[in-house]
Length: 260
Length: 295
Image (cartoon, rainbow over all chains, first blue to last red; front, top):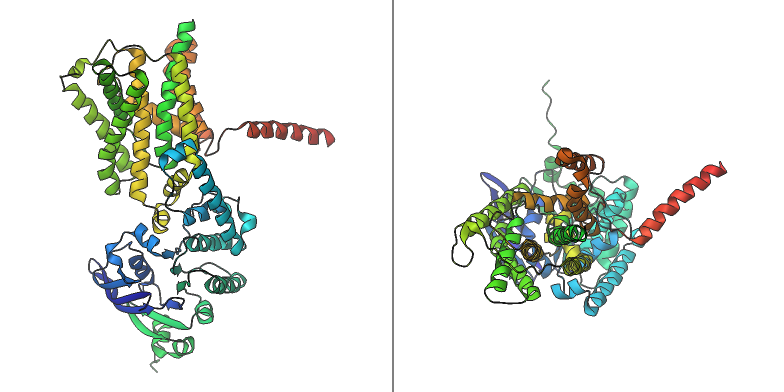
């Protein structure tokens, strides 16, 4: 059984079909790319998987569970975590606290222990702190642990957001344009970074990557799905995608014949 | 003179207790409320009934008042938070809540005498006792905000969507903050009633709500010590400004405008007051002077 199974998914906003009849399946540990021009419905697909927008038709199954039965925070606990196209860090907290919230979004000791600062609460806090530092270390952000997240450089914020997402120990990680706004050098570093977190994790994590920088997807993913105007245009390996005339047409349009 | 000072101290302590509650809701969870006087009212009435009719001692009655207020927090919080009310909508809804409480209490005659209110409440609120309670409340609030619960509240204030998508149950966390804030305000209401010895439904008006909210914003969102200091200052200010008589309230308003103008993030701006920071501040000043001399 696949980890994520999307069948005939349609999402409609009023008269607009943002996603129509999309099929997609993903095995544990796999990394696939999701590309397509602006407005193709990539982020909407992510929003549907994480429960932010309701589906109109079709089914979303994760790990054998029907996702439409769950609220966004419950879906996160099932093991789906994501980053955002425009960074959404807790900008007034330190880097360490950001990751700490990812580790323990459910406070596992009661209100009374918290008010009184009882030993079990203190111990748990210490554990969380250590784990948070471990995650930061894994993504080489340990030197920034006490920096306020909002004041960090852009590239670091992107990485921190990914660190926060993997701190929830997800089985599926959704990365929404992680290389947006990065220069070539930063993009290359990001490729190595994503490959590393994909290979070194305890949960055999699968990744879906939305990206406009084609070299990122071509480099990282063995399997790519192209969306256009809400539906799947084609699926295949990077070489096939790169040479597919339909993809080229969707991205840069058709060469017009000149009259005369 | 002693009575005058202990009176001011009592008012400060009551103010601080109420502000502690609202700090958790507004300063940490980021929900503005214009109606926490409603909780003070509910807490005051519940505890006064417990004291006068059931002859329960002061401290348990105070906690009972807080619990009743928290229960109403749950009743009001569930539909408002579930309906994803936020920002201005929520603030106005709370205004409606406190008005509803006021009008309902004005029209209930058994036990509480409607608009006439309850008088001859025993004067339990001694200055030392309420001060102790206030100190305890500040300590508890501080501990809470430093815990995981506090951190989660902050994450909702900073970036609600992201918090929800990494697994925070935003609705429940908001209701929780709301109930805790109701609890503290309810206790403050009880202390108030047992200091002035009479309460009417109009005792806790919109002005009371505004004053508590002002102290939280004034002291700094995301700080506990800041609003505590602000609550004390705002309670003292009208007394200190007595020297200018008629111009008292004008100056009070002008001071608030000035602080918001020059320190929009509030006095402490999300940081906590600590002796270390004070020492560092003065060292910094000293250090600067030395370098000036060196030049």
